[in-house]
Image 1 (spheres, rainbow, N blue to C red):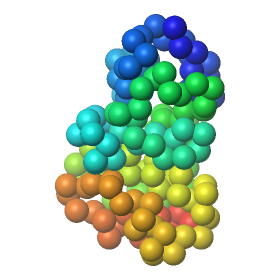
Image 2: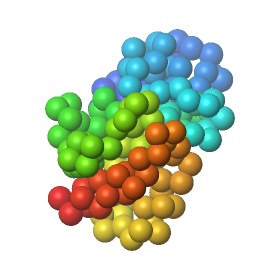
Image 3: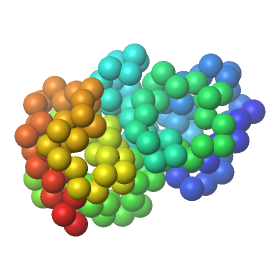
Image 4: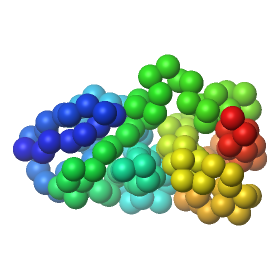
Length: 149
């Protein structure tokens, strides 16, 4: 039995300790905004925040979470008005949309830790978040816009 702090709420799950956080979120708690992409932490679709830091949930066993605070895309903003989400819409970032939750979570963690990132900071923070539609230019522009708000 694991007691988890997810999106500011205490949640309890009875799962195998090796179960990846991604599957706890999706299959046991019905928080399906976090996506499965590759299963090996290479694509970024499963990115969540653990104590404010962007992490890949597909390879993180639930037993490693402890008392850390988990934030998913559902918990970033109840109304979709987080500065990154608003900038994403302003720059028309999503195409197919599959990677966007992970992209947004990585960008939000970057800006929370570095409110005025350089191009290099953005590139480094977003490295490993793959967008098969190729919207990288719009992603970077949206991050810059969100940083100004």
